[in-house]
Length: 450
Image (cartoon, rainbow, N blue to C red; front, side):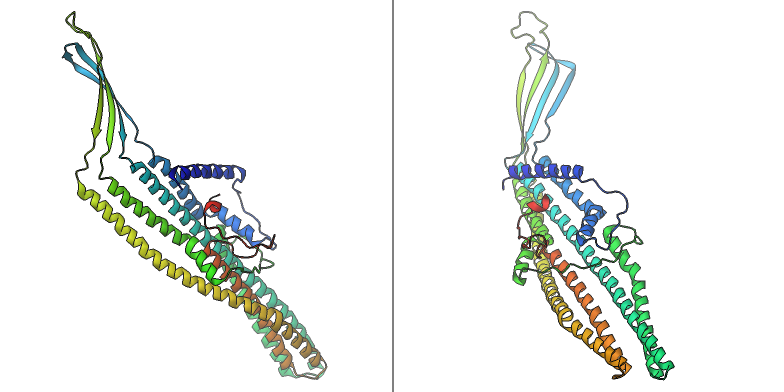
């Protein structure tokens, strides 16, 4: 894309930001989240209120304004001189002089400066995108942990109610010598263990709530209800496709690529600086009437055209600029290779964690928990009929509790792994719930800018 087209696109982008700012004013004051509030509400709130992200966005928008500055000619210079002692000439005394100068950089320098500013703005754009994806990950992971805690508390309370009912049954039976005292003690011990686990969960709530509020830029103690459900979206991209997406659109990698391009342009500009800039000017001199009469051209004001050439004699300076740009380019290339390896390894591990969490979710939800529920109901019926002892019933109840907590943990791990993958590829990679279509992989940044 040519520089003129890029500049035009930047201006359209600035106008779009202004219109968005007018149509979507910032919400002032606390926002009350409900247990049915979707994750999207949390993400939108965090994006709107996070000062670090706003700072990165403003820094990028500020860099956009440097492009027209870099591609503009230097300001012309207007000078005025008044002769304190008039210079006497044949046609009359010179009284005043007005001059106008315009500097012109060597052809190609302005274009390179514009491309340099554009590459810097592009790097800052992807820096902003990287911070936004980091923020999204913090919100998603904190939201998932908070959901898991809420479900763990609810499941533990439900199991405590079951044990309390069983304890009452054992008390009645023990009073009539139909049950052993050891069974009653075991039920009370198990109830105490569940109560301790519940208290640990409840004490954890302020910490996880503060973590989620921090991502939302809210007060740590601001109230947030436990989310009612966690979205279970399905990835429709293979691991190889995700790796390709990460290499091409990961904001950290693309930012480094923009920096590499910036240093290449800086080197080209340093080589271009070896060529001279020049200035064109004109001087107008106000001349009075000649003191002697009959002089031809008496009082005629002369007009002088001028050209000035800057001589780039200090070659060492320009060679140093070239070497500096070359070394920085190599530095960014090394950093790019290292970061790409790290990102791809993180993606592979996150993809494994996602697949493993999907497997566990299906295993607990569709197989183990239904069987554990059947086992518990059968053990309870047999216990009430006096066919099995209390330990069999207690083991069945423990197993159902652990499977239920493990299911919620797998759902949390699935959500966190998905958040990691989306952070790496900087895209939504799941089925859209509204139209059941896969989010398209767009290699350009046009949609992100708008």
